[in-house]
Image 1 (cartoon, rainbow, N blue to C red):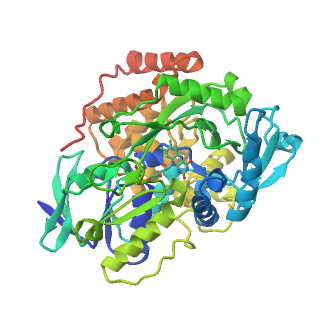
Image 2 (cartoon, helix red, strand yellow; image 1 turned 180 degrees about the vertical axis):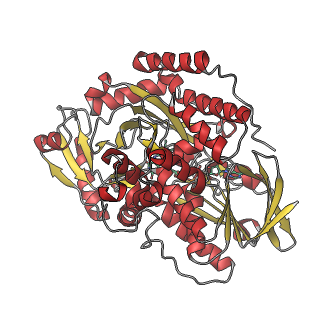
Image 3 (cartoon, rainbow, N blue to C red; image 1 turned 30 degrees about the horizontal axis):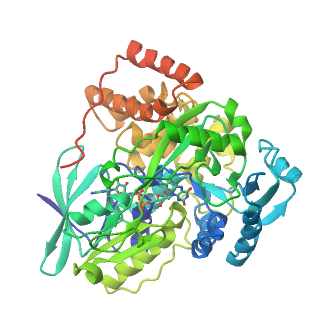
Length: 544
Ligand SMILES: Cc1cc2nc3c(=O)[nH]c(=O)nc-3n(C[C@H](O)[C@H](O)[C@H](O)COP(=O)(O)OP(=O)(O)OC[C@H]3O[C@@H](n4cnc5c(N)ncnc54)[C@H](O)[C@@H]3O)c2cc1C
């Protein structure tokens, strides 16, 4: 059996695992990241992508609010190409509790969040599609953050510093000896190969799956999964983040992102056994659409693109019968040596997408402690690859002769300064593969060579290929040929990969299948069945 030696193994390629991976490598600690699916395929790829200002939490949870505004400021500096600094509004309607608006302004002030009341007219100028019936409005420094780019940039940086990544590889066993943890046993889900990684510390950053990972070592760590569903609209109907000015409830955040807008979220407790099969319910669609129309009435005329859900990992550190009161909603870092007597195992979960850097800092501090190291954390000032230059400097057109401004703009938007490694002034490189999202052949090649891409679904997460109005109907077929050329996969495998991609897109379209979405799906069906004769989805067993 292949055996790899390192100091730290990190389980989970969500934002928490990716951030911890990068922090370890920056501090000079050899580390390996193992992810059972693709990077950002868990909860990290299934949220609003809101870079909270903290205002959402200010009234109820001031500690979270302070944490958010601190990280908001840091990420706006170090992760510029992953963030759109849109700004945000809190808007109150007639039926909202007026006392909440007053509390918001006071609570934001005490948390250090810039929150300013503006007139109804000013709010409508900032956001013309806003409900004209609003009675009060406040500006806050909310922004949007692309989780896929964020994870990819963290992993890219760690890899460029010598870190190793295994995606589509599941940790099936944590190995232990008399001295505690000795490493992990893994299985590559694409090839079936089983191998081990020997390490002194194992960091369990597997999100809601953390309970399962701990259970495999006989440790009890109880999760209380809470599902949240969201709907994506096919147009960018709002410029800034729009929040309902009331206590957190269903469908109260409307977030613009790239070329779309999305409304979220619901919050439904689900059984732990259902975390891998959770689906968007019809009832949730109705709640979300009603909430969206309340904030931005125009959305009733806007085409829906897809719906999806994510599962939030809420943890209880109590053992035995848990009554739910000990559930934590903040960052939870567990040293299993102290809690369960198992040396070398750490679990980290909870928190938010936007507090990932802080979670990673705390986890890496504990890793350093375990390894008797004192290296300080510097991730609060070290920019991610792609965000090195201050401010977003537009790529100079004369460097990319013959390439259209929109291609240069969208490539830079997604990869920041790495645009210079992607675009070349040759006709093949410049050819468009995905017209909806302006993804070129050069970008596809770059992603396949540098960004841990194994299939078209991974490629979608790195480039947005297939995320536009046609949901990959044509571009997925074109992209398949790159896997044949660069990854040397067989034609049969390529066809199966295409089918898996279409099936995955279908999951998000199914809950909103009416009107334009139904018409578009009928068109895609003709192409996939009529032209390419696609067949059934492959079965990939999840458990080893
Ligand atoms: C509906 C919803 C909306 C949200 N909105 C926001 C928001 O707008 N802003 C914000 O800041 N936060 C938001 N959050 C919270 C945020 O999404 C999460 O806190 C964050 O993404 C958690 O990241 P993670 O890396 O800890 O977990 P995950 O992203 O779930 O990563 C865990 C990874 O571990 C992998 N894994 C599991 N088991 C194994 C194994 N045995 N071997 C190898 N790998 C394994 C999984 O495949 C997964 O990729 C939202 C959450 C939800 C549910």
